[in-house]
Length: 286
Image (cartoon, rainbow, N blue to C red; front, top):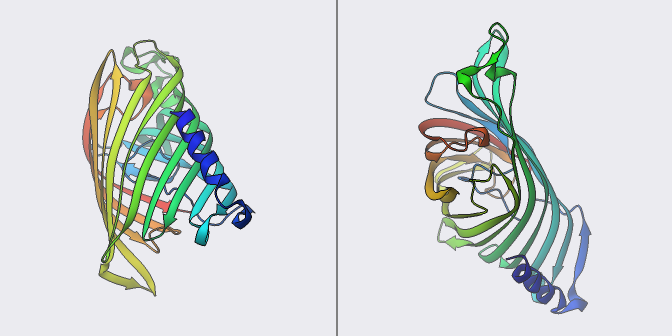
């Protein structure tokens, strides 16, 4: 997986080197976060249908170095960093959220693309460390014990993930479809399978609502299928529909409704399954 990506990268850099240009801290995001993928760097909240339960995301992915080359600068490569975490809140005491569990990620990414805005093929490689923890919202001070007799799990997953995507415009509709796989070089607990797989599609258009304060409003829908294994593989599904305020590939807030069913979103509950409908809010800082 990584070898194939490096071959693609070297080929792209070697083509028309005289036309190449390097940039420190390029603008925007070379690979926008996948809308229906729970393991993406973003800032926002997703409110479950269950009372008090929320997924709170804090993080970002930043491109540090950019390269453009080839005829009409249609070749692009960026290298960046990813730092993110999401927390499972199960209620509040006064103004204090009860944080039950946290998943944290850090690492880096390399993205290569060929084409322009109207038709582009993109490959993103991420190398990430993922760890998960139960925290004080899952602990009863009065009883001096963890809730539900569930002890913390020493969860770790160091993995590389390669996603291939194609995106373009069809009339007023923008489409991105993608597929990918990941492999963990280190994983615990041991029943968790090292390989995982994902595939999905995103559709968006600014033509239905038009503009708000001179900025476009993009209606969108997104779907992702994820296959992960705990002794055996099982599918997880997420469907979203909502509106992004501002350019689709630029900064701006998003509101959406979603349905999720499959393995629990939080790795401390890696051997459980959930189904929920909820509403979410995110902000893009591209």
